[in-house]
Length: 116
Image (cartoon, rainbow, N blue to C red; front, side):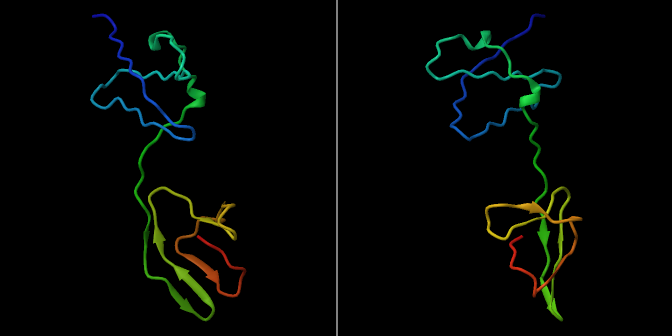
């Protein structure tokens, strides 16, 4: 049985991404290539993008948050997540991982304002 090639154009805007799956096509590989929209080259002749430039996407469960509590100047925010990292920011532009990825998150109310 010969190899069947299926190719179709998929327009992706700058900064966007595409989810390409091979669900129900077990054992069949997927190759991705790109060209400028004005390039008339046949898509089956384009060289594939190396896997080092692509990433896998897998949906993960959303975190769940419990009721926050405030006691003696300490704010406790209970949260759980299957996979994920809690991040913090002081300006909503630069985000960094909270050291230790604590569950629950416990912060002093008197510390500098932060967003999580």
